[in-house]
Length: 189
Length: 258
Ligand SMILES: [Zn+2]
Image (tube, rainbow over all chains, first blue to last red; front, side, top):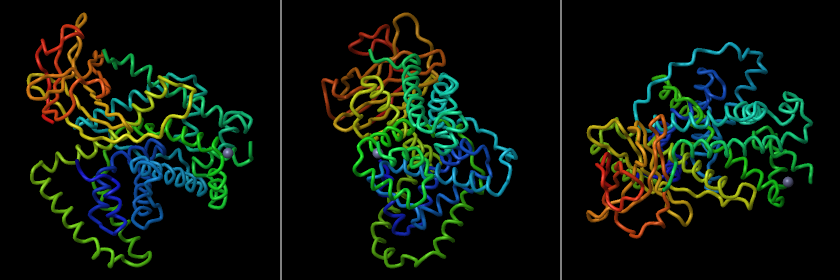
């Protein structure tokens, strides 16, 4: 097995540029694709990655083991950074409708990509299977990263009920996922 | 219920100011409800990044991003010269190791393998989520996930387009063998795809699955169910007439050494 992320991160903390590059190579595609999913904007996604790696290199974002897995952590930092940049753009009155061209998707050239795509299809299918208001809830909360108040306004809900609705939507999403997975042939005889 | 408990969502989405976040974190130390809710939010959303369609990054992005990071590093505080000296030996050793690895594998091969480890680390959580949602929807909080991919291989076969990956995942006290296959031929009747672990030419059943209409199938097999433990030489998948074969009756379609 290769070095764990934890070990790599320790080297980054020591200022090893090669290791930052290694982490970059490993996560580039996922983080870039994720930032595009969140923002719908390929140019912004590139800025997001720049911010994320500046934060990591300059220790503005510090990973600690108690925060969980490194992969989850770096994805979370990317999500925060992206939500933040989208908001800054809004404040600057740059219309989010003017999306830049999103690059063509590439055919899966490797098996891991095919796998990611498979899992992605499962998850997207599960999201589509939800009741419309739950689909919207997942989108506004997780992918758009709105505040509780904004979600309440967007959905015409009392502020106090938003948390419960989010939880319910996510729980349904996960049972939907296990349903699909079972139908899809997961089957231990 | 405290007023702070209403801040979980905004804390999770990073909308609290630094002071608000600190106040909430102080509250979090003593409020089990908030701890539980936060853990649940993390678990339920952990695999959602995989919902992103893979998009090929522009070729020049890597240089731009790394340049920006290193430049920012120079303008903020001191260059960690001393640290570099201190750790140089282990760093060098590590680099040598990496260089050796690159010599063994084609460099083009290395990146997909690394990326695959990443996907699996997110997918490992997905399996954990499946297991908890299946067994105890509303019960006690699921144990903090400690999945770790112990080993991962790609299975290959001749004369078939089918592909499969197998990963050994450690979930706390339990090892799980997770096999995912695609581009499988359709099955007929009772036929199943059977996974085998092989030790000294002796095959052991390690889970079976059926393919769906898209030719995909997967199985997660608890290693505790195996009669033998130890040094596995290889993993193989065969098509079997039914789910009862004690040894491979059908042709082995794909395999990999371990
Ligand atoms: Zn609380």
